Length: 201
Image (cartoon, rainbow, N blue to C red; front, side, top):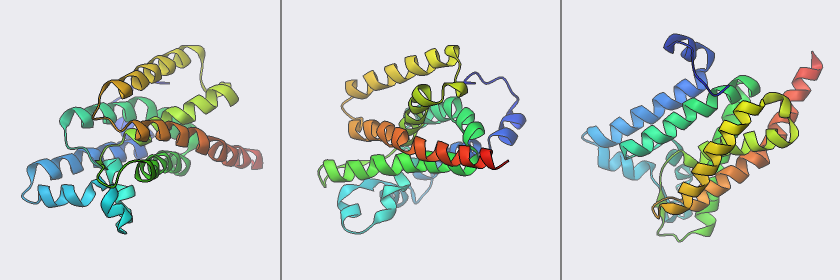
């Protein structure tokens, strides 16, 4: 489930949404680090609470695909590649997008409402934690999707991720926590839709 053993071409064919999102992460990273317009593009993409409150609402979404530091990009993209494919396969493309983007949006709205206007943030971490939130909901309500071995992997990685959230003062703690909560909150809606579709056939 979480162990990748397929070829690169097979991965792209099986998981087009995860592949696309990862590619977008990389392209945006390159654009904001290695192009003549990198500074203006970065300032256009960053989740600035001040500018969101002033009406630039696209900034609730653009941070989800924006990473400035290579380590940040690698960690979030690796997490997406590790934990995204199984959910894309279980939920389908549209429901996966709703869960991933929806959790990131919830995390960024919480950041806007609960942190100062001077606060600014970037990164897909809220969406990544949203995937964890969906998995946690499934562990308690749809155990048929996750076996014991993968449950252990998931809980260990989630535990490490939560601990590291509180150890780095630069991390948007609220973004991580509300991403997790957002994913868990969206999960019953997404899975109910999936089961209604299955019951029709």
